[in-house]
Length: 355
Image (cartoon, rainbow, N blue to C red; front, top):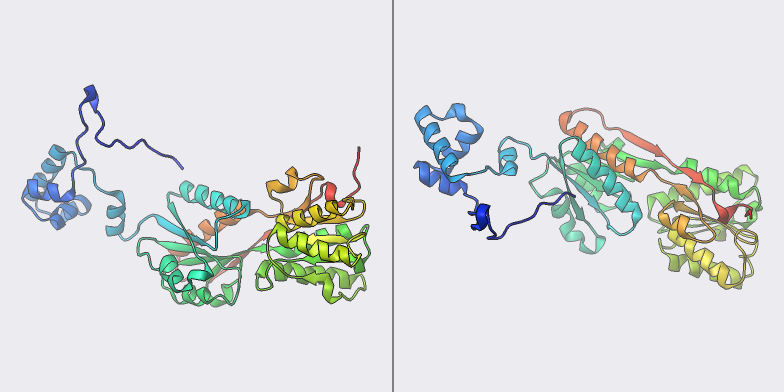
Protein backbone atom coordinates (compact mmCIF):
# COMPACT_ATOMS: atom_id res chain seq x y z
CA UNK A 1 0.00 0.00 0.00
CA UNK A 2 1.38 3.39 -0.95
CA UNK A 3 1.69 5.93 1.83
CA UNK A 4 2.21 9.65 1.97
CA UNK A 5 3.85 11.64 4.77
CA UNK A 6 1.29 13.36 6.97
CA UNK A 7 2.15 16.89 8.03
CA UNK A 8 0.75 17.88 11.39
CA UNK A 9 1.44 21.59 11.76
CA UNK A 10 4.86 21.17 10.14
CA UNK A 11 6.63 23.73 8.05
CA UNK A 12 5.69 24.71 4.54
CA UNK A 13 7.96 26.59 2.20
CA UNK A 14 10.53 28.56 4.17
CA UNK A 15 9.70 26.66 7.35
CA UNK A 16 6.32 28.35 7.84
CA UNK A 17 3.50 26.29 9.34
CA UNK A 18 1.27 24.73 6.65
CA UNK A 19 -2.31 26.01 6.53
CA UNK A 20 -5.05 23.51 7.53
CA UNK A 21 -7.13 22.26 4.63
CA UNK A 22 -10.26 24.31 3.98
CA UNK A 23 -13.67 22.69 4.44
CA UNK A 24 -16.74 22.86 2.24
CA UNK A 25 -18.44 24.75 5.08
CA UNK A 26 -15.79 27.49 4.88
CA UNK A 27 -16.23 27.70 1.11
CA UNK A 28 -19.99 28.12 1.56
CA UNK A 29 -19.49 30.89 4.12
CA UNK A 30 -16.96 32.70 1.93
CA UNK A 31 -19.27 32.56 -1.11
CA UNK A 32 -22.39 33.37 0.90
CA UNK A 33 -24.26 30.24 -0.20
CA UNK A 34 -25.35 26.95 1.31
CA UNK A 35 -23.19 23.81 1.50
CA UNK A 36 -25.62 22.13 -0.90
CA UNK A 37 -25.04 24.91 -3.44
CA UNK A 38 -21.26 24.45 -3.20
CA UNK A 39 -21.73 20.74 -3.77
CA UNK A 40 -23.89 21.39 -6.85
CA UNK A 41 -21.36 23.88 -8.18
CA UNK A 42 -18.67 21.24 -7.98
CA UNK A 43 -20.61 18.20 -9.20
CA UNK A 44 -23.36 19.71 -11.41
CA UNK A 45 -22.25 23.22 -12.38
CA UNK A 46 -24.92 23.41 -15.08
CA UNK A 47 -27.53 23.43 -12.28
CA UNK A 48 -26.12 26.63 -10.71
CA UNK A 49 -26.55 30.19 -11.99
CA UNK A 50 -23.44 31.78 -13.48
CA UNK A 51 -23.04 34.51 -10.82
CA UNK A 52 -23.32 31.94 -8.01
CA UNK A 53 -20.97 29.56 -9.78
CA UNK A 54 -18.41 32.36 -10.14
CA UNK A 55 -18.60 33.22 -6.42
CA UNK A 56 -18.17 29.56 -5.43
CA UNK A 57 -15.20 29.05 -7.73
CA UNK A 58 -13.54 32.23 -6.47
CA UNK A 59 -14.02 31.06 -2.86
CA UNK A 60 -12.57 27.65 -3.72
CA UNK A 61 -9.52 29.25 -5.31
CA UNK A 62 -9.02 31.72 -2.47
CA UNK A 63 -9.26 29.09 0.27
CA UNK A 64 -7.44 26.35 -1.64
CA UNK A 65 -10.31 23.94 -1.10
CA UNK A 66 -9.82 20.40 -2.44
CA UNK A 67 -13.08 18.41 -2.79
CA UNK A 68 -13.24 15.03 -1.06
CA UNK A 69 -13.06 12.47 -3.90
CA UNK A 70 -15.02 9.89 -1.90
CA UNK A 71 -17.84 12.34 -1.20
CA UNK A 72 -17.92 13.28 -4.89
CA UNK A 73 -18.09 9.66 -5.94
CA UNK A 74 -20.91 8.90 -3.50
CA UNK A 75 -22.92 11.83 -4.82
CA UNK A 76 -22.37 10.50 -8.33
CA UNK A 77 -23.87 7.16 -7.25
CA UNK A 78 -20.67 5.12 -7.08
CA UNK A 79 -17.79 5.05 -4.63
CA UNK A 80 -15.16 3.11 -6.63
CA UNK A 81 -14.86 1.12 -3.41
CA UNK A 82 -15.41 -2.62 -3.17
CA UNK A 83 -15.21 -4.75 -0.05
CA UNK A 84 -13.82 -8.16 0.74
CA UNK A 85 -14.82 -10.07 3.88
CA UNK A 86 -12.75 -13.04 5.09
CA UNK A 87 -13.17 -15.37 8.08
CA UNK A 88 -9.68 -14.38 9.28
CA UNK A 89 -6.46 -12.93 7.89
CA UNK A 90 -3.92 -15.34 9.36
CA UNK A 91 -1.68 -17.29 7.03
CA UNK A 92 -0.23 -17.12 3.56
CA UNK A 93 -3.46 -18.52 2.05
CA UNK A 94 -5.34 -15.29 2.78
CA UNK A 95 -2.38 -12.98 2.21
CA UNK A 96 -1.93 -14.20 -1.35
CA UNK A 97 -5.64 -13.92 -2.09
CA UNK A 98 -5.75 -10.33 -0.79
CA UNK A 99 -2.67 -9.41 -2.80
CA UNK A 100 -4.32 -10.68 -5.98
CA UNK A 101 -7.59 -8.89 -5.22
CA UNK A 102 -5.93 -5.60 -4.32
CA UNK A 103 -3.68 -5.59 -7.40
CA UNK A 104 -6.63 -6.27 -9.73
CA UNK A 105 -8.86 -3.69 -8.04
CA UNK A 106 -6.12 -1.08 -8.37
CA UNK A 107 -5.57 -1.98 -12.02
CA UNK A 108 -9.27 -1.48 -12.71
CA UNK A 109 -9.49 1.83 -10.84
CA UNK A 110 -11.09 0.63 -7.60
CA UNK A 111 -10.08 0.68 -3.96
CA UNK A 112 -10.40 -2.39 -1.75
CA UNK A 113 -11.76 -2.35 1.80
CA UNK A 114 -11.06 -5.43 3.92
CA UNK A 115 -12.97 -6.70 6.95
CA UNK A 116 -12.88 -9.82 9.10
CA UNK A 117 -15.94 -11.85 10.02
CA UNK A 118 -15.93 -14.54 12.67
CA UNK A 119 -18.71 -16.83 13.79
CA UNK A 120 -18.01 -15.74 17.37
CA UNK A 121 -19.48 -12.34 16.44
CA UNK A 122 -22.29 -13.64 14.25
CA UNK A 123 -24.80 -10.99 15.37
CA UNK A 124 -22.65 -8.19 13.93
CA UNK A 125 -21.37 -9.95 10.81
CA UNK A 126 -24.18 -8.96 8.47
CA UNK A 127 -23.83 -5.26 9.23
CA UNK A 128 -20.04 -5.40 8.91
CA UNK A 129 -20.16 -7.22 5.60
CA UNK A 130 -23.26 -5.83 3.87
CA UNK A 131 -24.34 -2.73 5.75
CA UNK A 132 -21.51 -0.24 5.29
CA UNK A 133 -23.36 1.90 2.75
CA UNK A 134 -20.04 3.03 1.25
CA UNK A 135 -19.20 0.25 -1.18
CA UNK A 136 -20.37 -0.62 -4.68
CA UNK A 137 -20.15 -4.38 -4.08
CA UNK A 138 -18.77 -7.07 -1.76
CA UNK A 139 -16.65 -10.21 -2.09
CA UNK A 140 -17.42 -12.67 0.71
CA UNK A 141 -15.57 -15.87 1.57
CA UNK A 142 -17.97 -18.56 2.80
CA UNK A 143 -16.41 -21.97 3.45
CA UNK A 144 -19.52 -23.58 4.98
CA UNK A 145 -22.58 -23.91 2.70
CA UNK A 146 -24.82 -23.78 5.77
CA UNK A 147 -23.36 -20.53 7.12
CA UNK A 148 -26.30 -18.18 7.95
CA UNK A 149 -24.37 -15.35 6.29
CA UNK A 150 -25.05 -17.01 2.92
CA UNK A 151 -28.77 -16.24 3.22
CA UNK A 152 -27.98 -12.61 4.06
CA UNK A 153 -25.78 -12.31 0.97
CA UNK A 154 -28.49 -13.78 -1.26
CA UNK A 155 -31.15 -11.46 0.15
CA UNK A 156 -29.01 -8.33 -0.04
CA UNK A 157 -29.41 -5.86 -2.91
CA UNK A 158 -25.67 -5.23 -2.85
CA UNK A 159 -23.81 -6.86 -5.77
CA UNK A 160 -21.80 -9.75 -4.34
CA UNK A 161 -19.42 -12.55 -5.24
CA UNK A 162 -18.82 -15.58 -3.01
CA UNK A 163 -15.42 -17.26 -2.75
CA UNK A 164 -15.02 -20.95 -1.82
CA UNK A 165 -18.63 -22.16 -2.15
CA UNK A 166 -20.77 -22.39 -5.28
CA UNK A 167 -23.94 -20.32 -4.88
CA UNK A 168 -24.47 -19.72 -8.60
CA UNK A 169 -27.67 -21.78 -8.56
CA UNK A 170 -29.00 -19.24 -6.04
CA UNK A 171 -28.08 -16.30 -8.25
CA UNK A 172 -24.72 -15.38 -6.68
CA UNK A 173 -21.53 -15.35 -8.76
CA UNK A 174 -18.99 -17.73 -7.22
CA UNK A 175 -15.26 -18.45 -7.40
CA UNK A 176 -14.18 -21.89 -6.18
CA UNK A 177 -11.10 -24.10 -6.30
CA UNK A 178 -11.14 -27.27 -8.39
CA UNK A 179 -10.08 -29.51 -5.53
CA UNK A 180 -10.62 -32.68 -7.54
CA UNK A 181 -7.66 -32.35 -9.90
CA UNK A 182 -5.00 -31.60 -7.29
CA UNK A 183 -6.35 -34.19 -4.85
CA UNK A 184 -6.47 -36.87 -7.52
CA UNK A 185 -2.88 -36.17 -8.56
CA UNK A 186 -1.76 -36.34 -4.92
CA UNK A 187 -3.49 -39.64 -4.12
CA UNK A 188 -2.34 -41.30 -7.34
CA UNK A 189 1.19 -40.14 -6.55
CA UNK A 190 1.06 -41.77 -3.08
CA UNK A 191 -0.33 -44.98 -4.56
CA UNK A 192 2.86 -45.44 -6.56
CA UNK A 193 4.51 -46.57 -3.31
CA UNK A 194 1.72 -47.18 -0.76
CA UNK A 195 -1.13 -49.69 -0.75
CA UNK A 196 -4.64 -48.15 -0.78
CA UNK A 197 -5.30 -49.53 2.70
CA UNK A 198 -2.32 -47.54 4.06
CA UNK A 199 -3.36 -44.18 2.60
CA UNK A 200 -4.92 -41.57 4.90
CA UNK A 201 -6.60 -38.20 4.47
CA UNK A 202 -6.14 -35.89 7.48
CA UNK A 203 -8.65 -33.07 7.02
CA UNK A 204 -9.71 -29.79 8.51
CA UNK A 205 -13.20 -29.15 9.94
CA UNK A 206 -15.88 -31.51 8.63
CA UNK A 207 -18.09 -28.50 7.76
CA UNK A 208 -15.42 -26.98 5.53
CA UNK A 209 -16.26 -27.31 1.82
CA UNK A 210 -12.67 -27.75 0.69
CA UNK A 211 -11.97 -30.48 3.24
CA UNK A 212 -15.15 -32.32 2.26
CA UNK A 213 -14.40 -32.14 -1.48
CA UNK A 214 -10.82 -33.36 -1.00
CA UNK A 215 -12.01 -36.25 1.16
CA UNK A 216 -14.59 -37.20 -1.46
CA UNK A 217 -11.99 -37.31 -4.23
CA UNK A 218 -9.56 -39.21 -1.97
CA UNK A 219 -12.21 -41.87 -1.43
CA UNK A 220 -13.08 -42.01 -5.15
CA UNK A 221 -9.47 -42.59 -6.21
CA UNK A 222 -9.10 -45.45 -3.74
CA UNK A 223 -12.40 -46.91 -4.91
CA UNK A 224 -11.11 -46.87 -8.50
CA UNK A 225 -8.32 -49.14 -7.26
CA UNK A 226 -10.90 -51.56 -5.86
CA UNK A 227 -10.51 -50.43 -2.24
CA UNK A 228 -13.36 -49.61 0.12
CA UNK A 229 -12.17 -46.84 2.43
CA UNK A 230 -12.14 -47.70 6.12
CA UNK A 231 -13.59 -45.08 8.52
CA UNK A 232 -10.16 -44.35 10.02
CA UNK A 233 -8.66 -43.50 6.61
CA UNK A 234 -10.56 -40.20 6.44
CA UNK A 235 -10.53 -38.08 9.56
CA UNK A 236 -11.41 -34.45 10.26
CA UNK A 237 -9.97 -32.01 12.76
CA UNK A 238 -8.60 -28.51 12.37
CA UNK A 239 -6.17 -26.69 10.11
CA UNK A 240 -3.20 -26.73 12.48
CA UNK A 241 0.17 -28.39 12.99
CA UNK A 242 -0.95 -29.43 16.48
CA UNK A 243 -3.83 -31.44 15.00
CA UNK A 244 -1.53 -33.10 12.48
CA UNK A 245 0.92 -34.09 15.20
CA UNK A 246 -1.87 -35.36 17.47
CA UNK A 247 -3.24 -37.59 14.70
CA UNK A 248 0.20 -38.92 13.77
CA UNK A 249 1.10 -39.75 17.38
CA UNK A 250 -2.15 -41.70 17.76
CA UNK A 251 -1.36 -43.58 14.56
CA UNK A 252 2.13 -44.37 15.80
CA UNK A 253 0.75 -45.76 19.06
CA UNK A 254 -1.36 -48.10 16.93
CA UNK A 255 1.79 -48.97 14.95
CA UNK A 256 0.05 -47.69 11.82
CA UNK A 257 2.21 -44.68 10.92
CA UNK A 258 5.20 -46.64 9.63
CA UNK A 259 4.49 -47.38 5.95
CA UNK A 260 1.63 -44.86 5.66
CA UNK A 261 0.93 -42.41 2.87
CA UNK A 262 -0.67 -39.20 4.19
CA UNK A 263 -2.55 -36.48 2.32
CA UNK A 264 -3.02 -33.56 4.69
CA UNK A 265 -5.67 -30.89 4.07
CA UNK A 266 -3.11 -28.11 4.43
CA UNK A 267 0.63 -27.63 4.88
CA UNK A 268 0.36 -26.96 8.62
CA UNK A 269 -1.30 -30.33 9.23
CA UNK A 270 1.38 -31.96 7.07
CA UNK A 271 4.09 -30.22 9.09
CA UNK A 272 2.63 -31.65 12.31
CA UNK A 273 2.58 -35.15 10.83
CA UNK A 274 6.18 -34.83 9.66
CA UNK A 275 7.41 -33.59 13.04
CA UNK A 276 5.64 -36.44 14.82
CA UNK A 277 7.24 -38.96 12.48
CA UNK A 278 10.66 -37.44 13.11
CA UNK A 279 10.16 -37.59 16.87
CA UNK A 280 9.50 -41.34 16.58
CA UNK A 281 12.53 -41.96 14.35
CA UNK A 282 10.44 -42.64 11.25
CA UNK A 283 12.17 -41.43 8.10
CA UNK A 284 10.26 -39.30 5.60
CA UNK A 285 9.74 -40.36 2.81
CA UNK A 286 11.28 -43.83 3.31
CA UNK A 287 8.84 -44.89 6.05
CA UNK A 288 6.13 -42.23 5.83
CA UNK A 289 5.16 -40.33 2.69
CA UNK A 290 3.44 -36.98 3.20
CA UNK A 291 1.69 -34.47 0.92
CA UNK A 292 0.22 -31.15 2.06
CA UNK A 293 -2.21 -28.66 0.53
CA UNK A 294 -1.84 -24.92 -0.28
CA UNK A 295 1.86 -25.00 -1.27
CA UNK A 296 2.80 -22.21 1.13
CA UNK A 297 6.38 -21.08 1.73
CA UNK A 298 6.41 -23.54 4.63
CA UNK A 299 6.55 -26.37 2.07
CA UNK A 300 9.91 -25.19 0.75
CA UNK A 301 11.35 -24.29 4.17
CA UNK A 302 10.69 -27.70 5.72
CA UNK A 303 13.32 -30.46 5.68
CA UNK A 304 12.65 -32.66 3.89
CA UNK A 305 10.83 -30.27 1.59
CA UNK A 306 7.10 -30.88 1.47
CA UNK A 307 5.16 -32.07 -1.56
CA UNK A 308 1.98 -30.00 -1.72
CA UNK A 309 -1.02 -29.21 -3.90
CA UNK A 310 -0.63 -25.64 -5.08
CA UNK A 311 -3.61 -23.28 -5.15
CA UNK A 312 -3.86 -20.19 -7.41
CA UNK A 313 -4.80 -17.88 -4.55
CA UNK A 314 -3.68 -14.64 -6.22
CA UNK A 315 -5.85 -15.56 -9.20
CA UNK A 316 -8.78 -16.36 -6.88
CA UNK A 317 -8.65 -12.81 -5.54
CA UNK A 318 -8.20 -11.23 -8.97
CA UNK A 319 -10.95 -13.34 -10.55
CA UNK A 320 -13.36 -12.43 -7.75
CA UNK A 321 -12.72 -8.72 -8.33
CA UNK A 322 -13.33 -9.04 -12.07
CA UNK A 323 -16.51 -11.01 -11.46
CA UNK A 324 -17.79 -8.42 -8.99
CA UNK A 325 -17.17 -5.47 -11.31
CA UNK A 326 -18.89 -7.35 -14.12
CA UNK A 327 -21.86 -7.93 -11.79
CA UNK A 328 -21.95 -4.22 -10.85
CA UNK A 329 -22.11 -3.32 -14.54
CA UNK A 330 -24.66 -6.04 -15.49
CA UNK A 331 -26.86 -6.78 -12.51
CA UNK A 332 -29.36 -8.89 -14.47
CA UNK A 333 -26.83 -11.22 -16.10
CA UNK A 334 -27.04 -14.95 -15.17
CA UNK A 335 -24.86 -15.94 -12.23
CA UNK A 336 -21.77 -18.02 -12.97
CA UNK A 337 -19.32 -20.21 -11.07
CA UNK A 338 -15.65 -20.13 -12.07
CA UNK A 339 -13.45 -23.06 -11.01
CA UNK A 340 -9.70 -22.52 -10.77
CA UNK A 341 -7.40 -25.51 -11.16
CA UNK A 342 -5.14 -26.97 -8.46
CA UNK A 343 -2.10 -29.18 -9.13
CA UNK A 344 0.46 -31.27 -7.28
CA UNK A 345 4.01 -30.01 -6.73
CA UNK A 346 6.27 -32.98 -5.90
CA UNK A 347 9.13 -32.51 -3.44
CA UNK A 348 11.12 -34.70 -1.08
CA UNK A 349 8.44 -35.71 1.44
CA UNK A 350 6.63 -38.06 -0.91
CA UNK A 351 9.21 -39.41 -3.32
CA UNK A 352 12.60 -41.10 -3.23
CA UNK A 353 15.27 -38.69 -2.02
CA UNK A 354 18.36 -38.19 -4.14
CA UNK A 355 21.81 -37.25 -2.89
